[in-house]
Image (cartoon, rainbow, N blue to C red):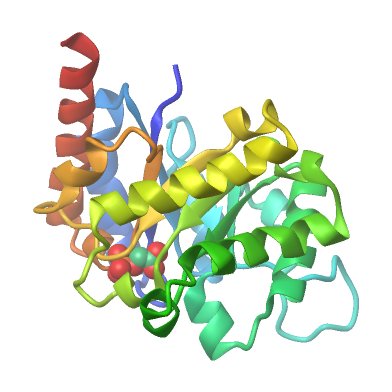
Length: 260
Ligand code: PGA
């Protein structure tokens, strides 16, 4: 059974108090009752090792929010893929629009990171999506394909096997404006069709997530869309009570689909 993946992207938020409270409540209130959902936490780098210890003996995994393109050496301030592996990380988010925008990361850098993560046995989560302007110009599909092609230009189609693609329209992130479900479905199906035209087996092994202003009130529409295999949750993961309700609701809804 492929489980629905929920990733809490804490971005640049949290401290030891926040982490202890959040992880304790997640362990106490939800993790033992998760059967249809997998949960992963993406905290700021410096807390990864600490949270890894808190999550020992649970099925909750760790996600890193970034990685450097170098594996070691004189790169002050950077964190390598080997270090992420060392502290127990499973997934690594790359290509997030906040990194593209605030840190000038382009498709070339993101493609190098993707290949590095994959070749080191971790799972890349490639975020892609269009800006509001690009959407208005009907360029969504073109932009998504460009972002995928930049990886294929530096590798081959096998690199996409067992990876994750997160469709995150940039205008929907943190804005409170989630994308229309038909548009999400259309874009994910388009990406799937494109990858399938290159290799019809590999596309079956790619998880497709959606991210952008998902919360407990609009969650249902995303759960009902079968092209979506999981969600990247930013703001709504920061208030633990809401996040727990969201995960519980996802588990219950998916359970009801499976039994009907
Ligand atoms: P948001 O963030 O849920 O706050 O829109 C999503 C993301 O950045 O992945």
